[in-house]
Length: 625
Image (cartoon, rainbow, N blue to C red):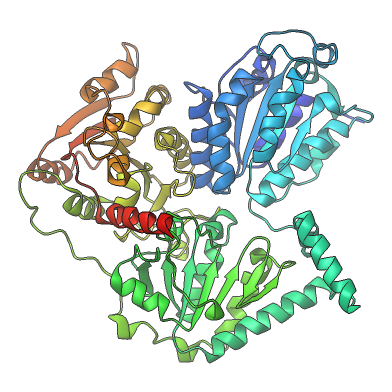
C-alpha cells in the first residue's frame, strides 16, 4: 500500500478543499509540520502577529471564500491565545480547521514536565478539553493508536468532514512524532464533502442532539407508530409550505446568516427571482442577495428597522425565514413581531412550519425543491410589494449639517462611493456562496458604531458585507480584513477590500496591519476617531473613564509597520470635515486600490448612528422585562 508522511496527507487535504492560505504562528511543537506547508508550491503560510489575530484572519478568509480556513498553532500558549477567535467562528457558523502541534506521544505518555504545560497531572489533556465545547469534532492523535495505515487519516478526515458539513470549527492535535509518521494515501482518493454541503438525508436524524432523539423516540413509541421515511417527511414539508404560500396574499422571504453559511444564498436568489417574491435581509444576512433589486424590501431587525420595512415584514401573511439566527443584535433586542403562525423557518437542523417542527429535515434538502414547487403557484403573487412603494431606496445624503463629520451623513455618503462592476449576471442574486465570482467591494465593519452604520444603506449589487454581529469581539475586524483581502486575491475578478474600524477597537489588533503590508495587500482602512469606545458610551458610562483610551497618532501607523524595507506602497490621510472627505471620495486616484491606505476620519465624541442608539434603547427595555 503506497505510503505518505502524515503531515503531507494533511497538506494535500487542505489543498483539495480549496485552501490556499494557512494562518497561524510558529511554535516549537508545530515547526516541522510547518515545513510541509512552506515547501508546498500551492500553499502560502501567512504568518500572523499573534494567534488571536490568526483566528480572526481565518474567520474572515472563510467568510469571503465561502469555504474552510486552516489555522495552525502550538500546544498550550498558542492554541489558548486563539480560542476567542475560534469561539466567534463557532457562534457565527464558520468552517475553521484548527490544527495544534503538540509534544510527542512519548512525552505526553510519561507526563513529562515540558514547557507550555501547567505543572499538574492533567496538563496534556487540559487544553484540548478547553477547545472541546467550541469544536464540532476533535481528533487527538496521542489518544488514537495507529493500528492500521489509515487510522490517523480516517480520524483527520472525520474532523474535516464535520467541519465542512456543520460549518463549525474542528480541532486536530498532531504530536511532533506524528508529523513524519507513514500513513496510507488511499484516503486522498476519496473526496471530502464540498464546503457547506448537506449530509445524506438519513444522516440528519443522527446529527440531532441526543436529548432530542430520545424525546422523539419516546414520543414515537408512545403512539406505537413506525417512523416515516425521511424522504416522505421532506415531501410532506414541501407540500405544507406550498399550501401556505398558495393561500398567502402578502408573502415575503427573509434571509439570515445561516443561509449564507450553508451555501444556500444562491438557492434563495433563484427562488425570489423565479417566483418574484419580495425579500428582506437581516443584519447578519445583509447583502447576501442583491440590495439594488426592485424586489428587495430592506433590512429587518425587529424594532430597529426602518418603519416601512417593519410594517411590510410584520404584516406579511407568509414569511419564509431562511437560516434564522435570532441574536439580540440581529433582532433589535428580540423585538421581532412576526406572527408565528405565518412563519416557515428553514434551518440546518430542522424545519418549523407554524408551530410544527420537523427535526429530520435540512434547509439544504428542502430549499432546492421549493423553487420548482412554488413557481407553479407564484404568478398571482408577483405584484406584491408595490403597495409599499416598490423598490427599496435610501435617498442620497443631503448637505451635511455643520463642519463636523457625523454618522447621519457619513454612512450614506460612503454608500455612494462603493464600486460595483457586474461581471457575471448569473451571480446577481448571490452574495455568500462558493459560486460567487463578480463581487467588487468587500466591506468589513468592526463591532461598534461601524456595524450599525451600514445596516440601512443598500449596498451595491455585487458587494460582500462582513460583520461579526453575534459574537461581537472588538478588534476582530482588523484580523478578519487580512483574511478577507487574501481570499479576495483568489477571485477571478479584481476586488477592493474596505475596512471601517473604530479608534478603540483598532488598539486591540492593529499589529495585523504589518502582516497586510508584508503580504502586499492594499486595503482601505477607515479609522473612525471619536476619542474612545463610543458604542460603550451609548450603552452605559457616558462620561466614565473606563470608556476612554490613550490616543494614538494614527498617521504614524503605516510607516511604523512598514519599517524600512517594505515594498508595499502606502498612504496615510486625515479628514476633519465633510468638505475634506467629499474631495477625497471624488478623487479618481483615491478610488484605485494601488496602495494600502489608512484614512483617519475625525468624528465628534457622543455622535452615533441612529440604529445604534435605537439598539441601546431596545436592549435596555429587554433587560427590564
